[in-house]
Amino acid sequence: MKKNKTIPYYSKKNDKWRVKIKMEYKGKDYIQTEEGDLEYVVCEYLTTSLYYPFWLDEDRDTDRDFQSHDHSFNDVLRWLLHYPEHFSIEGFEEYYSKQEIELLQKFQKKLLEDLGKTGE
Image: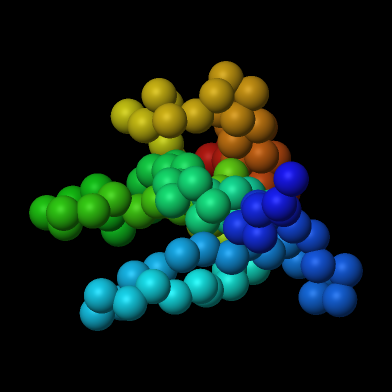
């Protein structure tokens, strides 16, 4: 059986996951290598992505056609870490699992407590 060279694989040399994807440009096919964490590589392999929308206070009063979002839960945690007072998933709970929601709530509460921003 011939090995499929487009299946994601781990590169010890680069310490990253990699996948070769077929791209078309001006009628010609090309092979492009994408690399990163496994979640990103799997999404590239499947030509899809995860979607985690959230609010930052600055987003709420605008007529933008797009919502603040990210494509990995790790990156959502980074947004919350940097903007704990302004971060919310209100109205977007359907995009998150129960565990993720509980983790975000606990993380935000702890950050605000440790920053002395609990309103007490």
